[in-house]
Length: 303
Image (tube, rainbow, N blue to C red; front, side):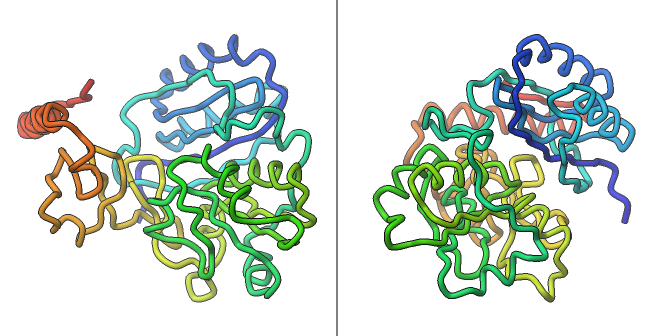
């Protein structure tokens, strides 16, 4: 089945001194071609996901590659049945993925890239420590067999986790992975700086692995969380089976929807006790407005 929306995930660490001047040009170009999504740009590069028609995405990628810093930027491609994004944003940042450790960048030092076809053999070796560099809610719905959960809520927690739980003197070979490759690439720069002998990361991330490796050969277990309205994807980078809680933006399974603290458009079991009564009231009001808009056949973009 041909799905109407093309989704392109991309990133590249590169010298990008004119990123502030490029921001309005990139935003206007994407809007003019009905491309939606979020791109983060900083002096160290670009990162994000965009979606649109085949023609729109091809044009946006060509425009990005027209910049001297990104002529060879790679992207991961998948498809969606509904618009994955409702707006287009190009945000100025100090880091294109926030780890919060000054001076640690893949532009200076990076681990060994491992292709999806090489990945299974590496994971099966006995002397490697395999660490999922994503957040706890991402790990919860799917990960590689045997991978370790760092129990981080945000990527900024990863450096502290490594300092408190692992040692370059005892653990010589560390393998990392993430959704599209950017977090694990930055993580390998950190691990090199910490003195680990051999550091590896999955080139193209989980998305590239799910795209290239047949399900019958795969070591992936579950679904992969994605930061758009699809919520999750499965083997073949096909749309997954999770919904998203409006309150905390975490994935929610069909089983979790049966929890007494789940209320569609308002909260789930994770955030029910973490949000105020006023926040719940605002969410309920918004959800009613969205449902009314649907019935009338008009768009409701929220705040």
